[in-house]
Length: 640
Image (cartoon, rainbow, N blue to C red; front, side):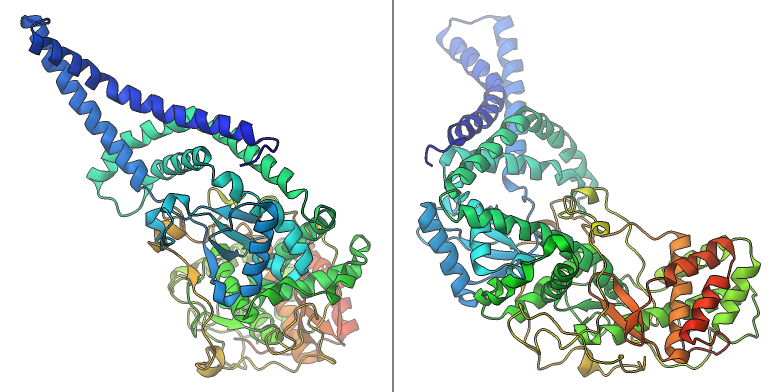
């Protein structure tokens, strides 16, 4: 490691961390040292007598107990599995150009080359040590496991949105961190801290029998004391490493890096918006968009056209995109999209007929239309159970008449919340079975088999959700709305270069038919399998955290309230009536998700009129909108 600013400070703090370990070993060895002195004194005749004999026995027993306890703590720390980020590993054969770029970058920085490259569905990049034996990575021939360089983890949205030169500039300070990582003192201090961090969670790991769990409690207490002792030094060590890496990287693409950081902030906003507004409704319907990374290009391109702050960003699209460094960008995009669904929604690890991928041009039919008709069917089932005009057909007028005659919609909102919970408990969780494809039906709001075409419930937020990878990302409220567009050809069917955004189809979307889809359409047998998601070792502990964290690890949104669910269901009923009676069509807005297109244009004023009906029992604003659009609320709609 060179003499950059922070390098010496990092080494000093690393030695301080190792001194904490040395003091712990000294304390554990102290009773044994006293026992050796007493035994040696007794053997030479200097410490003789009944009192010394008793002291020798007591100290020797105490030394054995302390040494056994210390050995147990050391064994737990050594064997504990450090947390490992779920990623999609990219072998060198799958991205030779990307590996060459990283190797060239490491050569220019005069640092060790990362031992591998992996992608994660996050707008961030970092180095991750995967040398622990529990991670299951094969050792590099001729190199000791502890000397293996870390793995370079890259946020997948960066590869699709950034150009090659921008990605190289952004990765320069990250790759420069392999230099400090190779320093023996810093590497040893990091291994010690990671072992402590993993050992703390051993007692909470699922599957432990009561005896082992009870024995792990005191070990955890000792480990927490050690962590408190080295916490500040470890934090200062990492700050010094970051300062040293940043200073070394200043000689490589420094000017371009300043410009590229603007793209990082834009990618944060667009990726967060795409996940919460576009991907989440699909995940709730048992579908996962298989081209999320390509979709973020379209979303950010639309944002660039609408946002004055982003003017000129689309001029970059003529340059070579960083995803061209991959041999099979479509397969990698599919794998990272599935991983994103698992991380942020809790979907299964593999696709299937009940958890099927969806392309962007299929999104309006398979997600938007199904979502509306599923929620409309649920709304009428709840009205049937509440005894509201049981003989009425499934019409929008039935819903409006009920809400306009009730003071508030709290009773209906509570009933819908209960219905959603009942459906969630009446069928397996999303990790075991996702909603089935909808069937056709002409009526009209009466009972549907539980689990057929229902949304999956919103996951409860994890206790540490605020520490997820989107904690620093700005909320989507700061991103302006974009004009709606019908999705064009899927990224893998259109141009292989994602700098060409997905274009809207001309004219309204074809009328949807929510009938059952053939199995071959949901999971084609001829489709090549995506690259495997990297889960070295045990899935529950190595990949998803040492405590076996429940999925989703990072829920995107808290559970929806009853009022929000009621508004969603009434809006879905309005959209179904508009599609069936006024020639409207479901559509996809890249920044706002599912949208209703009337004459190819979006009507953003619908939400306020629905809220007037729900909160004020005033149907007139909505009636006026329906008359303007040509919707007939007295006509029955097709339901799932």
